[in-house]
Length: 379
Image (cartoon, rainbow, N blue to C red; front, side, top):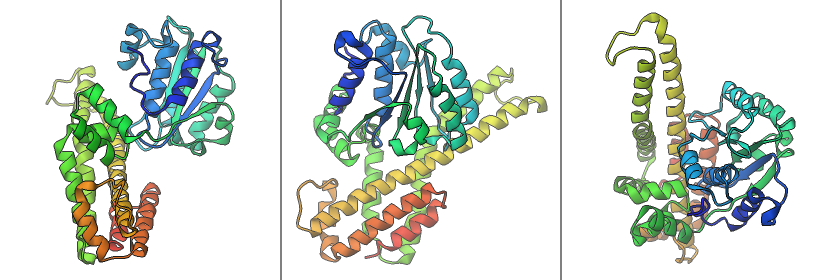
């Protein structure tokens, strides 16, 4: 098994990184000390970063079994991974990562440092990383991941080699779900189509019937908004759905983290926490609140992405283009709405969805942004 097998729809990027990991013997360019992998959400940036890291840390370019297992468990001694579940990456975490980057590799050719969501660094934090990229250790390779080059400082962009990913095809994602996860082919195709080729979301839809049903019910309800009152109620409902999804995803993890911290402090579950030991728990709770906020924002953004696909289908129906619909399960409802509205009103709603995503990203209250957007969807 090759470490590259699960990277779908990115043949050019895989060829570039595979050749670089193999060096001149594989016809590749000379290795560079810093790489930037960019691509749209769900294109597999992190997956490709870890595949590249595995190739660099292994005894062969396709990866060896022991290294593949260690990287998958994030336990390889020469791998440092920095990610965040909060809105931004902490400067303290970047400083610690930079410090570790100067360690010599212990068992491999390189020490590899992966920074997921590098776009989530504020300028001050990015400058801390910049210093390490300007004076890199000879045997350290940095791999940054971000949606686009524009999300990073120009000074960082000038010190990395970029590899751009594209959105995988529905067929590629469906084949991955079938071969890797054993998903029925029809369900795999439906999930990949509804997820708009977002790998992680496709897998969730394929393995969670409730998520599929919730998505469909939400789109049907939005198509049935009749007045401002409906829009206000629906906005609150969408926020509650996003919040419930985020809580389901993080709730068990939060509890496990709390129990682990209590054990490290020598406190039995349910026992009284001495005042002198409460500071670590406060820090943990603050981190979990930041993670919950990001989960809510990401959930709302995913709902807006689904709504954008719905109105894209509606616009195609109004323009007489019935092939290539994303939400084919709602064809009847889309056809009915298309007959009672115009392409101009549909485009207006699509623009409102785009504005809502920007406003929420700028820290506007999600409920207010959704209310303003849904008012444009009144039939």
